[in-house]
Length: 294
Image (cartoon, rainbow, N blue to C red; front, side, top):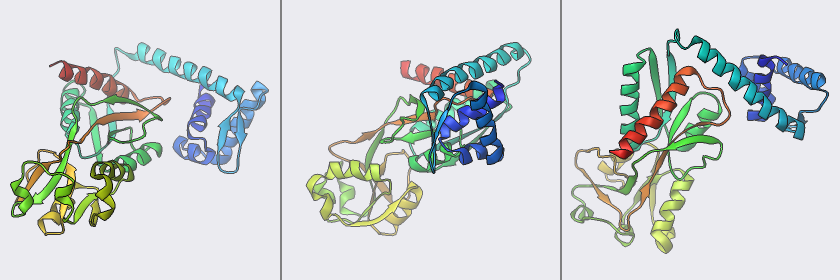
């Protein structure tokens, strides 16, 4: 068994789709299919159940996945150990980021990491958690900073040490601006601008309780700057995080009872990381721990 073919096998096992795996591996679909069939012939077992749209591992395939991952990991570790003294950590780390206060922690970590590894460059893509996950699945992003609630069952992750508080952005001349906090009843008569993610809508619906169905939803958004612009133009009040960002003629009021949302930095399970990504993940674990202990 060649390590190259085992890497092909692991990619197909991860993606459960030969066409998609072939695209990620930069080989043709017929070439990849042929390599998998030759591997099955070599081992004398069937590794995949082949469906119309996807493939799943047989019992033998599951066993090979465990062994193949061990072999590939050992191979990479051996290479790294042999090349350690000459190794220059370089390359691009692509991270998808939602709008959250934890971005300040991630930015601090990126800055001090580059002090040690100046040949590493970061590429930041701003979007919602759902869009970031989609791009991670397509191999367009290495990791993502996701705001909860979010399904992270397919990912390794580290939890960020701060949470985001929910509230509203409202014009300074609104009668709501005179309050210290806002309750569900306070918002009953105002058009609302809310995040378009369904999981977030569900969480807000729970906070509003029985009056949610009576509310007027004027617009949805995915970037707070655009939501702030709509508030400033009088479309309504925006439910959003307190990002400690000042907008002219607007003020932020926290919700009562309080809602807080966590964030997680995630990357795909069972994938071989580049040296830059592996070093950055190790570094961020230590960086976050040092912040949490301060």
